[in-house]
Length: 173
Image 1 (cartoon, rainbow, N blue to C red):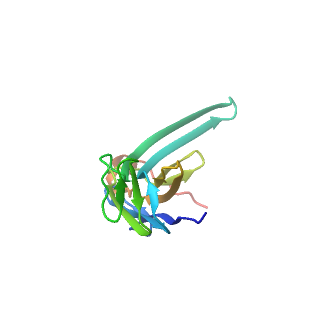
Image 2 (image 1 turned 135 degrees about the vertical axis):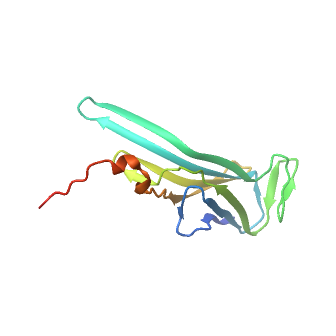
Image 3 (image 1 turned 45 degrees about the horizontal axis):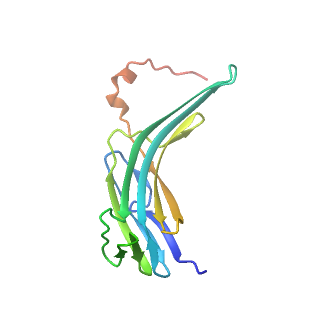
């Protein structure tokens, strides 16, 4: 059986993959097909999460915690009302959409919340951000892909009065 799906990518408009809280995460999901392909939906999910894992070797206890900063889901194709646009056609009886051969582009745009913590990877945890997408076929086959992106939240230490009150010591030699 020939391969129908040539490419299935998440392309972010900002090629550096660096974003700031309050900016827009924009891009598109690209689907490149060799032949007519029936799908039931194209799903998109943006995730931002922080995880902390601490363990006390002496007592053998461990503490894990997780916090979600972004959990945004959208359906890029396969509206619940059964309508499709462009070069797609809907088969109402099966609730499928037939995508024609060629390249299909599905844009997305999300405003990132203010106050997001910066991307971080450390010994005891991390903060990470990523998009993932899933293209579902009526046969049950699901194609998946994901793309990480970096969030940097600059901090102006001059605006942190508590830090300015700490004593500053210079060590010699």
